[in-house]
Image (tube, rainbow, N blue to C red):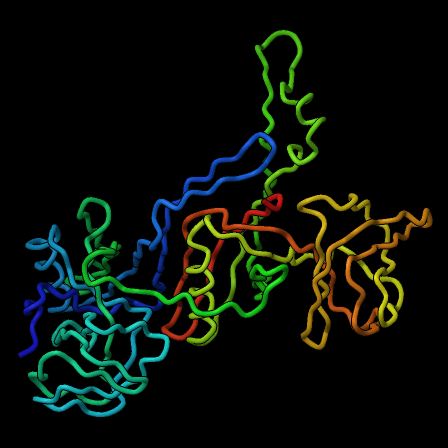
Length: 408
């Protein structure tokens, strides 16, 4: 019969309380060394991300007692923990004695030789198995099933994980038989790992990937500028900036790092998978990409003719092209986009300016054709941690910090 103690070890059997969400974290490790002239050297310390899940359980009756005793006896052990954001479900009954189960495996990250768990989600029935063969609509498992599992049964990839925070658990009882428990699990990258795919690049500029998914403006993004110059103040006398002379010789050293924190609303498994794959291709702070500012940095004033290599905008005190402020992307209302490098900005002295670009436009367009014109920034992630906040198995919010840096 299915049990918590099986041939693989102890299985964490309960489904999270989705009303509180499930937080998925992917954490890389990168050393970033910045030279005085703003160039960066990035050293990958952890190539594969550490994965973790934080969630709450809301349990009643015997479920609460079961978790209470499980933690009392075994909190320090390794648990075979379902990776709940990747859950799928049986399409048809899986009969006792069968070695094949029918389910949709798309974007679920099952892997050959990896562990999966069949569960009722309530802790009363779990059955772990290793997968031997994967197909888009079925999985062959290592041993015949011991019981019949009905259609709709939850099937999830699982990995070996330990409790966060020194095996500490936090629980509270609302009544004598209703318990809420908060837990976090760190998945071991070397033991039955959950392997995430990197996918393929959808669009590039100058042979480097562009991030084209616009953030969710309903969530206010933060924007910080970080200058690497320092002040020296001894408490008496003048306040000095010792790098001023060196900076005067190297304009790139004056450039701050722009730190932006964005959120994306991800609806459907495909959108969630695309976000995760983009993060996987970044390897934390290691791999650069192009990122629009997502702001309306230039306001077009006049029609642009077919073959033109300049356009007129409102004057906005934009600097002459310099690394970090020399590329733009024009988003059109029909969903298309064009990226160009600025070659010069001319002040027309009438509160307009002429922006010249390196490559002529292959078609003409009007002011009404344009959605917005943004700076296109050379970027990397500003943190080695990427979060996905799951509200439901089919929609989530993705969160990343992006650093705009001089092109290196």
